[in-house]
Amino acid sequence: MQLEPWRRTLYAVAIAQFIALGGGNLVFPFIPFYVEDLGITGESQIALWSGLLTTATGAMLFVFSPIWGSLADRYGRKPLLLRAYVGAMITMTLQGLAMNVWQFLALRALQGIFVGTIPAATALVAASSPRDKVAYSLGVLQMALFSSQFIGPLVGGALAASIGIRTTFIGASAFYLLAFVLVFFAVEEKFERPTDEERGSFVSNMRLVFNNRALVTLIVLVFFLNAGPAFVRPVIPLLVASFESARSPEALAGIAFAAMAITSAVSALSAGRLTTTFGGRNTLALLTFCAGAAYLPLALTWSLPLTMLLLAGVGLFTGAMLPTANTLIDGHAPPGKQASVFGVAGSAFALAVALGPLSGGAVASAAGISASFVVIGLVMIAVGVGVLALVTEARPAREPEVEPEPAG
Picture 1 (spheres, rainbow, N blue to C red):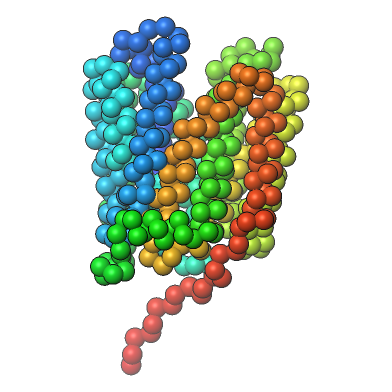
Picture 2 (picture 1 turned 45 degrees about the vertical axis):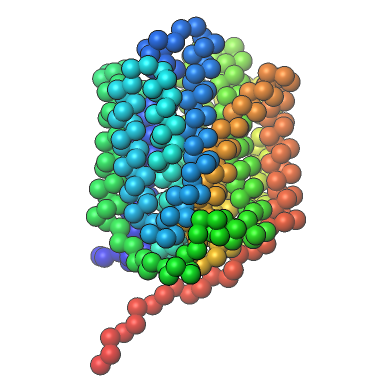
């Protein structure tokens, strides 16, 4: 049975993103240990450099995502996704060859400049899918992302222990190579290059985005939707370690993150059905309200099993939020400008990833672990109010395009 072209594109890109992002996530468990191998000593200095390395990648993603998005609208989404895989492959290999921490920092920044696979893949899938299938397609893509966040660190930790940190960095580049080959051969993009007048300049494309109030509102929301999970990332290990029964807090923290990732991956698939039933705006409002309500009990949890259960509950609501928001963004995007819009949304994502953990750690340090969950819970509830007050429904779904029957 031959798949429809849009389904073939969706599944190929989703599998490629799972492979590529799984490769990217391989290295996160041992970055602090690599920093130490590169000559940095002292717990505080290792922690500082580990934070700088993460921030460097996010900061460059923030700056360059809109640029790559605008180029994708000009030259095609598939070529720009392939470019991102090549950039990741090269920079990841070089990171395994770094001789000092400054070289490592520069290469992490270069990775942020040349990668950006998420907005490129999102734009490619959204542009290739029939309008009434966009929510489903973006849910499948988001499921691949969450699944990679679960599998990647587990595999990375095992590889680093068996073959070494440097070899694992180089091995991670092979994941991007495999993703490149899959997209190159399995994805056929029917892209018509716009005329000079249609494509405009980078500045004019950005003006189109920022003059659209609905898009600006949704892009701000993308920041908060990504900032929520990022906010609690440094706090969850502290919460797990606070229980007397937590004899191996590092392993238990990994299980806690895995619980959130698994339920997030499952719920991402439900985004399309919820959006079709209730509409994108109402679905997003409901999910953010429920996510906020799910965070609040974590401030009062009294046992480790209950904490794991509550974190899994958080994942059930946060997992469907982003594909729902992306569906609304695609619906409001000017025709032919999806990649530009998702590039700006990619900047919001990068900023959230950079600022979220810093904010969560600062709140936990100043007011305690419990206060962090109260703060993010109330913020998410406020975001839900903002969705109801400010977000408008995307343009109605069009019927799937039907191939014309041959004459005669």
